[in-house]
Amino acid sequence: MKPARISPLARVHRAAITLFLVILAGGVLAAPAQAAAYRYWGYFQLTNGAWAFAPTGPAQTVPKDGSVEGWRFAVADENSTRTPRATPTFDSLCASTQVKAGTKRVGLVIDYGRTADATDGATPPALRATCVAVPEKATGSDVLVAAGTTLRLNKGLTCALDGWPATGCGEEVKPVPAAAASPDTTVTIPAPTPSAAANPAGPTSGTSTDDGSSGSSWPVLGGLAAVVLVGGLGFAAWRRGRGTSED
Image 1 (cartoon, rainbow, N blue to C red):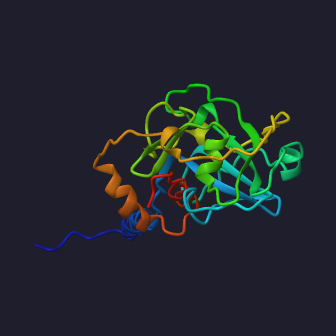
Image 2 (tube, rainbow, N blue to C red):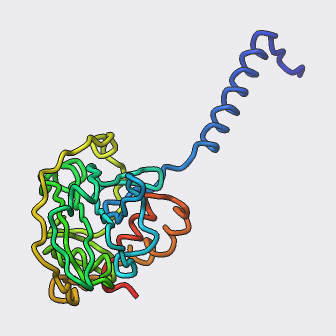
């Protein structure tokens, strides 16, 4: 039996379909994986008038006199930059704060994020800024305590400041809601209430809690995700938000 002849037009159609499938397969294989995003507190310092990710955690950071510390709660990945939405100067925060010998003045901005960053659409507290006078050797964690901030920690990770958020700790967000991915807008802060005198800023154990919970996600976040997101600014901020119980 002679094989059926394939018309020239059919050959063209078959070739076109084959080419389309090859291009489609190549596009699928080449598509970049979506970066993992997390809901977390990031830790920053004001440097040359702009927020920069802290090179170390707050328990290891000893801010100098004239420094401004910043915290921001947000949903972000390694491609995101979610800094505090207000950028005050040291003078605007600390000009009226008294300081004694052996102490230093440090400005502090805490941005609790947007409703879009919350797990349940709750309204976060208003951004607040202040200035504290603390001992010269005080750390970033001591600055928080001196400002009357309560901390909730889990295995050294800063989970909540002043009870925000009420639950959760650095959990992965997938997919990221459009509202959470939307650009930030600048926030205007009221004049801060200055610290009247040096606060000795004692140990943080009395103002922080560790929920002690342990889950299978923590080894992944601490190890595997670090490899996947190495060099990523969002994850770097998540890691640098580690709290006072960090070694």
